[in-house]
Image (cartoon, rainbow, N blue to C red; front, side, top):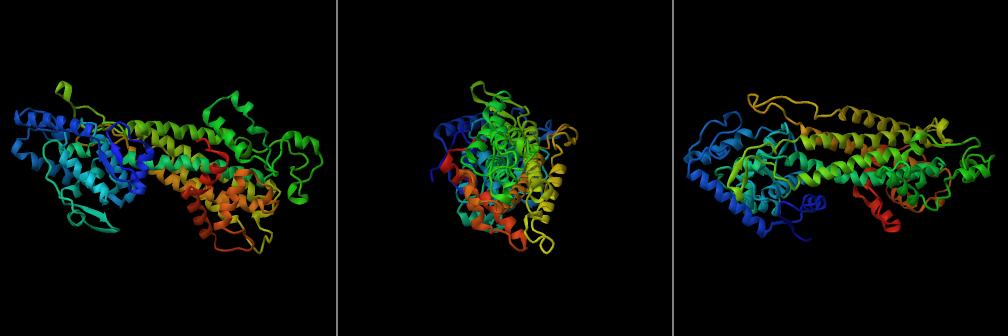
Length: 529
């Protein structure tokens, strides 16, 4: 595994995943080291000259007009961290914490923060030696950045707080000692330089958008399997329809569906239906055509390109925002070496990401919503032509009855979680911080919706596989055949009722592993997302 080189400008989402989930090591480039040293020289010069500069020789927030002498610098920075570490709730996952630390290092590597190289090197060592601070997930307003959670990160650097090390929670001091990393004493500008930023919301959002892209591919494959289980008509996926309304996500989804369904004998075109006007439902006589009077499918099948595509466009909008944010300077004040100018601004404000993550939440919620409606079509005999609740022994067995019920519950919960966090604001710091973004709440909600959406799609995968059991699973398309085989390796056909939550968990784990997408792409090429 190659090291990820950090220069503050070229970090990618895939590299964040490599560091966060695969524990790739990181290293700051020599060019960035020189930039950091130069910005630090400016800080030291201002301190030596007793200049009044916010965050360097003053207090913070509403105390910005209180001058702090240079002999009180270390105490000021320590007090900043320990007073701001007011996080609440369960700890962020270790992969999220690794992403947080990575993004903070990359922001400082731009050379605009004035943090000493030795201080940031401590954070690099923590990433590489896997010392993961315990960071409570709640308590950020998302402007002046993620002050509270990032303070918990810095606590460990100064030998306070708690950390995970080799699977155990221990004091920050003990974790650093066991990892062979020296704790530090912060000096002028460093406390503020480490906690003023959007790295917690952006870390959560980056992991979520990466998974959302993979889920968007899965949902195309799984919806295609549902189309086959319901003897769907493929005409609505023809490119000419979408070229006259050329939203990228819509075009891409339609193309994905046709590629995944290629060579399927369980779907129809309208011309095939017209040739067999008296064909019965294929679940009864084995033909590939649908019911006698079927002219078109319901929206959840016919409009898959439009529905999935809109979510894909939203997800890609968020991805573009993340690409910018993970390579941005978000602390305050910023030090511009060429002009020897220190400017106090508002790059820590999370509004650009708050709106984006609210949009991500809505996009994911809609993928789950349409998936649940397809599940309903599969289990409802009045809509499907299949046995009620996909069981041949209805009455004695309930089949997929409550699987759909659970999916509906998750979709309803997602609707509540989709209410935007970014429309709220509560002033803080004696009204100095009088508009805040709530971006970290938006990111956390999107992550929770992703979890729910993955489970809904996992239930659709199970139900669609069960649906094709009533026709002929050997007649599936090239992509759906792979998905069917993969789910059948972990979840067998439901003949008699059994404990279903085990199956749902296995199906969700299969989706989260991304194995279905990887195997399908080996055969038909990369799916568009």
